[in-house]
Length: 171
Figure 1 (cartoon, rainbow, N blue to C red):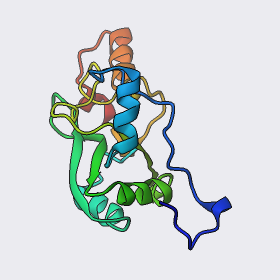
Figure 2: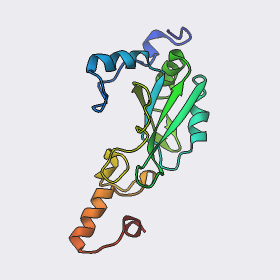
Figure 3: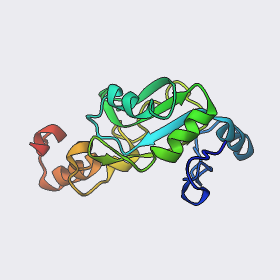
Figure 4: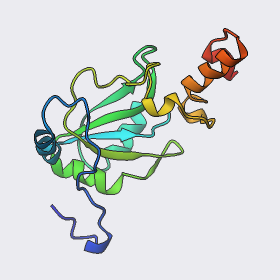
């Protein structure tokens, strides 16, 4: 479905990206089929402090949001920078892909991508320390995503021979 109020050349793409979930239970063809019919979006690069209410306020501008599933650190059960947004219709999800992807939320440029559909358990980060893998080895200080990467902090502590916790090191 095309938005005729926006010239064709300026419409953003809603096509599939090259990303595929390696833990998807079916094959690539089955995953692509689900992605092409999906009403669920993965939203990444969120601040750890962005609330479900902020996400709902932004994404409901594209259509009726069915539910939002916040990504959680599997150990601390605190937000870890991603979520899933499920719409009632594909056309509403496409509107979000077109107009919300690469916009700013809570002082961060967020990115959206198609998701084959939320399955319980996927709300937890896949990193070894509980959060997202991309935050494990981050070497820069990012206050919106918990400071330094957890594995980097642990490595520095090992070099020093100390036994401080990550929270103590970041203070």
